[in-house]
Image 1 (cartoon, rainbow, N blue to C red):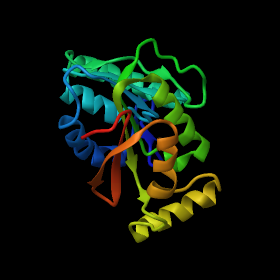
Image 2: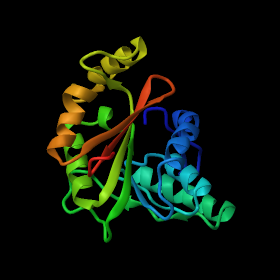
Image 3: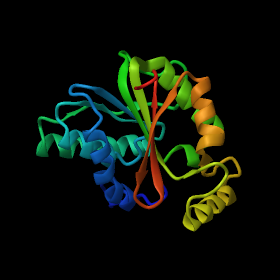
Length: 216
């Protein structure tokens, strides 16, 4: 995330965006996660999202991951806080996971994968690697939940999203807000996923749930 900050002598990172969207994201998960589900978050960043989910949903098992050492240190620090405040929470130590690596460092299959605010701040290949890894490691009835800004059929959904896209492209031409219908869903189909639902979220964002099987 772009708005991370860290206090002196404290490896925990703080993201105002994560604080704003953790409650709406929790509401999405509460109504869709089966009790006891094993949940992997890819690119956990500061760790604030998954710590909140683990605190509020102790019946589920949560596994954070990230590719960056500073993020892994932040997640570990947040986990120590959670262990003191909510000892019943089932939050695993973070995995050092880069989506392009093979194999992913997972010993068991996963029921649900989460990936929030990653695919627009990474090359497109990272999205393809994420989908390939999810297809390999999810249970047959598992699903992947993406969250962030998306284009719809070639159009930005808000002027702020268009400006954000331009700022991302200025930083790295391989980055940018992805088109849901033209890019993400076709790539998901190629990896063996079906579109299960699109959930409108605050601030012109979407949750996109991709299922390993057709849902009725």
